[in-house]
Amino acid sequence: MSPKGRNAMKQKNLPLISVIMPVFNAAAYLKPAVNSILSQSYSNFEYIIVNDCSTDSSLKILRSFRDPRIKIISNSKNLGVAGSLNRALKLAKGKYVARMDADDISHPDRLRKQVEFLELNPNTIACGVQTEIIDGQNQIISTRSFPISSKSCHDYLMLTSPILHPTLMTRASVYKKIGYTAKYKTAEDWDLYFKLLKFGKLANLPDTLYSYRQIFGSNGFKNIKNAFILITKIRLQAIKNGYQPAWLMLLSNLVQALIVFLLPEKLVFRLFSFWRTSKNTTIETLITQPA
Image (cartoon, rainbow, N blue to C red; front, side, top):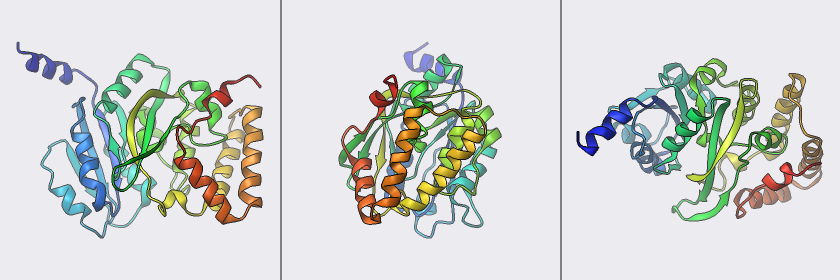
C-alpha cells in the first residue's frame, strides 16, 4: 500500500471531530477562516456552520465552498452566539467538538494536536491552545498565553477566561449535554467552563495553534462594566454550586472590581485594551506560586 493509502486508512480510523462555527456578517474574513479548517492536517471532521441571519455576503461565500464536510445551517431569526452554537451541537456527530470563529485562523495542526491530547488524557474534558493576535491585515500584533496545567485553568476562572473560546475542543458527550445558557450573552463561555469542571479537567496545549483577529470596536471591547457584572454573577453562582476558588484569585477578583467600578470607563477601556493586546499576556507564574 502506498504511503498516501496508509495515511487515508489511518485517518479513517481516527475519531470524528465536529467543528462548529457561528457566522454573522463575517464576509470580510470568512473565506480564510473556512479554508484554515479545510486545510487541517487532521481530515476526519464535519464542519457545521450556522449562518445567524447575516445581511452581508456571508451566506454566498459559504455556498461557494464545495467540500462535502461542510454543513450550512441558516437561522430563521438571529439567535446570537450561544443559540447558534446550541443548534450546531444538536447536529454534531463527532466524538469531539471543536469551536471556531468566522474571522480567525486555525493553524494546520490545531485539530490533530488537540484530539491527540484528549485521546491521551481521558480525565481532561476540554482543551484550548496558545494564541497569537492578528489585526485586520493579518499582521501579528501580540500573543496571548493561557495556563497549561489543570489547576491553573481552574484558578484562572476567577481572574479571566482560562481558554480562548474559539480554540476550545471538548468531549461531545458532555458538551452536547450541557450546551450554552442563552441568557449569558457575551459571557456564555464563562458559564460553560464552570459547568465543564463538574465533568473533568480543563487544560491548554503549549503550542500556538490559533490566530485570533482583534478588531477594536468589536463586542469584546464594548460594555466592559456590564460584562464584568454578568461574569461576577456567573462566578458567584459557580461558587454556590461548589466551585472552590483560590484565595489569591479572590483577592485578584476584588482588585478587578475596584478597577472596573472606581476608574473612569474610558480609562478602564484603555487598560483592558492594553491587557488584551500586550505581548505574551499571562499570569501562569502568578497563579501557580504558593499563596
